[in-house]
Image 1 (cartoon, rainbow over the protein chains, first blue to last red):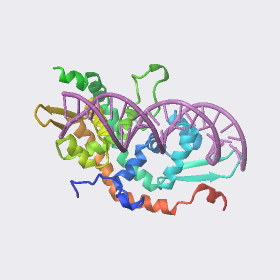
Image 2 (cartoon, rainbow over the protein chains, first blue to last red):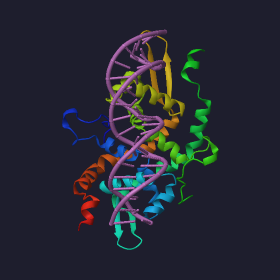
Image 3 (cartoon, chains in turn orange, cyan, purple, brown):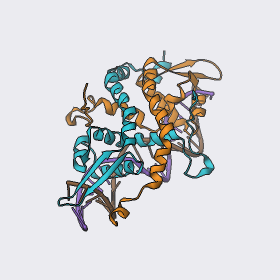
Amino acid sequence: MPAKLILPPVVPGSGHETRCPVRDVLDCIGDRWSLLTLLALADGTLRFTEVKRAIGDISQRMLAQTLRALERDGYVTREVHASVPPKVEYTLTALGESLLTKVTPLIHWANENHGQVRKARKAYVPPQAATAL
Amino acid sequence: MPAKLILPPVVPGSGHETRCPVRDVLDCIGDRWSLLTLLALADGTLRFTEVKRAIGDISQRMLAQTLRALERDGYVTREVHASVPPKVEYTLTALGESLLTKVTPLIHWANENHGQVRKARKAYVPPQAATAL
DNA sequence: CTGAATCCTTGGCGATACTG
DNA sequence: CAGTATCGCCAAGGATTCAG
């Protein structure tokens, strides 16, 4: 298919219904926590607190919010066990796993090329100095 | 290699130097414009204004800022042609192309599964209503 | 344990105007 | 054309508290 993907935004008049698909997924992985949460669930079902621990520096608020969004979009399922103490388990859906498949290579790439990026940053000459030459 | 990728954040004491690689790349694609800009440059060299047009709804400020960040991290090169009117061309580096290779499948996935996501959203029953059962 | 609700700060980002 | 500088808004998100 298309060498030309359509990046542009929302159709001005359309309100909210028709979004560019790229944007729609990007918005999901774009926020700070969604992808990390997805990755945390890659190895299997986890409870709320376990996800929290896996990510490390996410607040309760953000985790709850993120998980809800992922659930809403069909990436994870939420299973409540009525017990004391409460137990809620989160699991990737088929859709979530499918997405994960596409994300994983990116993660590997990140690990492998992280050095390059850091190197580029160190070597970088800000644009001001460049014009001075 | 690792089934266990380390998601966690910054090393507390380390200040800024040692970041989790995953985060470092995610931060790049995480912001609203970096990936879109990368995609815009996928087809070849573009001038500032051309990139702007390709994306559509990005402000000058954000585009300049994004391009600088991408340049800093070694994803794009910036070539200035001293002329009137000025002409500045942006091109993906090998690193940028490499990253793009990993991103493209994700984009395709987005296009193909966008419907699923929208479907899930429509069918979604908020957690309040769920407990009411 | 698993959240929801409230408060408050930060900074991402757009709009506008100005320079080379 | 290709930016930089300044301002101001508003949403993201952290900290804390309350509830089932």
